[in-house]
Image (tube, rainbow, N blue to C red):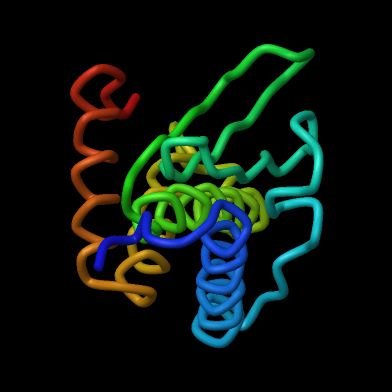
Length: 147
C-alpha cells in the first residue's frame, strides 16, 4: 500500500492528520505554540500555504504570493510534504528566537543564531528531518557563506 491509495479526500484527510501530529510534537519539543497562520490554510493564497491532492494522487504543499507560487512540494509520500511544512514552521520559530537572542546585536550574521536552532528543532522532530535540514543549511551556506 502506498501513500497515494484511496480517494483524494481521504488522502487529504490523512495528510492533515499527519501534519496535526507533527505540529503537536513540535509544540512539545519546542515549548512553543504554532499559530494557525503558520500552517496551510483552506485557500490557495493562505499565508501558511495550501495543501491539496492532485487527481493522480500526489500530495502538494504550495505557498503563493500575489497568486504566484513561491514554494512547491509535490510528492507521492505524505512525510515529504509534512517535512516541508514543518521545516518552514521550525525555521520561522528559529529565526524569531534568533531575533530575540541577547547576542543578536553583536553577531555579524543572524544565521549563526538561527541555523543551529532550526537544525536542533528538526532533529528533535525526526533524525531524518534533521539531516535533511543540515543538508539544506549546508547548501545555503555554500551559496551564501556567513559574513
